[in-house]
Structure formats: C-alpha cells, structure tokens
Image (cartoon, rainbow, N blue to C red; front, side, top):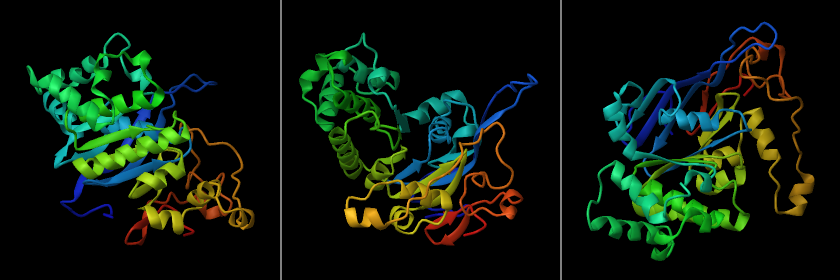
Length: 328
C-alpha cells in the first residue's frame, strides 16, 4: 500500500486532503456553523482492486464517494489516471466521468419508472455517444448477459424487477460506458443476505474479467471483508485506520477499529463466548462541533488527557498499515 507520497503506476486514483463542508446553523445564536462532513481524507485505489470504506452512519463515507465524482463540492486533490479531477473544466470532466461510475444504495429508486430496462441501459450510451445504430441493441443484450439476466428483460419496466434484479440493472448501467472505477454506495445493504452474496460474487467476477476497480462503501464489516483488498475505517469525517484486508481484520490497531470488529459475530460459539466485546459509550459527536484533539477520544475506552491536545494524523505502523492514534 502506498503512503501519503510516492508514484506508482498501479495506482488508478489518488485522493489527498479531501474536504467537504456543508452550511449549518447554530440553533441558539442563529449563526452559520459549517459542518465538516469530510475532513482531510487521503487514500489510494489500485488498478483492478477494491478499497472498502467503513464506519458508522454519518461518518462521511457516502459524501466522500460523491465528492470524488464532484457531485458535491469539495476541496483537495483527486488524481484519476494522472488528471486532477478537482481542477478540470466542465467539458473535460464530462468526458472523464465515463471512466468513473456510481452504483446507488437504492437501485430501484435510481431507475426511471417510465423507461424500459433497454432504454435505461442505452441512455448511458446516448450520453457518451457509444454504440450508435444497430449495434446499440446488441450492446444492451451483451450487458444484460454480463450481469446474468435474460435479454428479454430489456422490454420490462423497473417495477417488474425484484431487488436483486434492480441491483443487477444498476450495475449494468454502470458497466455500459466501460468504466475503470465504480463507486459502490451501500450497494448490497438493502438486499437479503442470499442476494447480497450473489451480487458480491457478480462484482468480483466482473472485476476479474474486466479489471475494474471499486470503492466499496459499507457499514457491514463482513461484506467489506469478503470483497475488499484494502480497507479504510472512517470516523467523524476522517480516516482513522488504513490497511490491507488481512492486516486490518487480524491485527487492528486503532481503538475504533477494534470496537467495530468486536461487534461482528463469530460463527464458532466457543470463540464467540470467550472473546471480549468492546461497547462504545456516548453518541457520535456533531461534525459541526467535533471534539478537540482526537475526534474519537470522547468514546474511546483507552483515551488519555493528551488525546484532547493532539490531533493525530495517519502514521505508518507497518508497510501495509496506518493508524491515527498517539497510543498505538
């Protein structure tokens, strides 16, 4: 895994110091209090690999994904295939967006109910001027086959699909423009467990066949462990631990990562009974008024007085592991 610096041809996307703020309002004084939803996030995505973004609801995972595509305004450096997306003019950004696609959490809601599945898929081809004429229908049938759906689905409407089928169509639309990177925003959270496994296996098969990279956003650590090669743990707008999958799940360093992993049930009843559960106290602080020093200190079971004074950045613990904690 690459650190904050360095150049690597295997890196498709490099994010440095990404920040996203939303206007807020003080309930007492009525003064604007900006909400820093994403505060200095940095990570890299390797070609043909998956990085998982995990954390509690409200930690900034989805906002990070939207900011990478400039769907929300952000600051920082987002280098995709050698180009800084934050500095691109609109016409160049439109062309580059073909290479980065997004799969939304609610697949059914992202599909226009007035359009057939064939039209929904070919709409992406129209936008980017791909596969014109007779070749368009052939491309639609090819894409449906790619995600494991019969070609007759091209004539159906979104309300005729199950949740898993709607998610396959959402994946199909993302694949239509031949992207290099897909941001999956809670792509399986609304599905039954058995359907989740099918969609995860489909995403892995597509990655092996097409060489696609994924940013997989999820709060489900078991899902992230199944699909990710690297994992970034977020808390209150910042990444607190970044590591390869095996290192993070076998040797977590940050207290927040340890607490998250302790909440994941283990199938072996003897191990489950013997292991210690770390219960976090208190509520997630407001991003409009985060704690001083380490943002996790107000809920951390091992916090010291110094944690209120020092705002830790990611520090290399091993070649594939970084953590933002002065006690590690």
